[in-house]
Length: 324
Ligand SMILES: Nc1ncnc2c1ncn2[C@@H]1O[C@H](COP(=O)(O)OP(=O)(O)O)[C@@H](O)[C@H]1O
Ligand SMILES: [Mg+2]
Image (cartoon, rainbow, N blue to C red; front, side, top):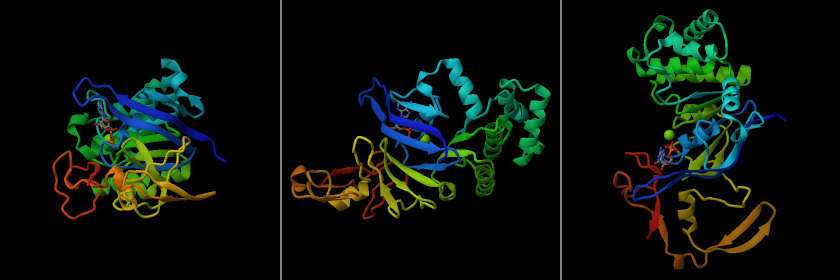
């Protein structure tokens, strides 16, 4: 069996806030185990904790609780310098935007991570030029980020991420700012690295194509993984081919649409139990108050009318359950 490249246990993150609505619990006890060479997509509505998860997994942010191991090393125990070195030789990040240093031109942006690793400047620049050429940017080597379009900036960011030949790439909506053509090119490049060089990918995405590239997809809702999907997931219809996840503590979080169909939050009687099978009888569900999907979006007030959509079509927020 392949080695584990990334492992997280009991990951919690709380954003402290003095504001009236108080602290935000962005991650609620996540577990993840990623094998070397795997490609995993993280899907879920906006605000579900995807970016927070990526930052905690990559060691950019310390989780409030829980542990993260990268290539077998527990990051929560490393000193600052050790963490920097481990990250430098193992993982690269690609965010939706803001990946580049504004004062450096394209080739210097790409060469910089190599220079940090001690590669002589001239060699670093030659490799940077080669990588940028591979990404169709040979004509813009000396341009500052501000002079590049969103798509061009992202291609430079991807070159910068790939230049160190990382074993793992963490990407937060990497094609979100790209046009469809560039997006497809980037995806082809990822595929090549995944299939031919065994690079592992953990990608946050809303895109069907990107999700389809992954070996499996994890569905995140309100800081919990609620389900897993196999290859070729349809991000617009997550109800198909969904496998529910029960974590180590025995907690199963039902996706909101399933909860509605079951009859809502409440008490259930345990019927039959066999290995791999359990039946629940919702006798007193009514007494806890019947739950239905909210009729308007709490964030932007969009009116859902008769639809049973779970994501707000205007702002992308998760549709909550409310008492009927
Ligand atoms: N810096 C922050 N301070 C306070 N709350 C935050 C901060 N960043 C994110 N959040 C909150 O944490 C939750 C998860 O956010 P995020 O990880 O950005 O989700 P996603 O990437 O899935 O949209 C949201 O409720 C968001 O409002
Ligand atoms: Mg995000």
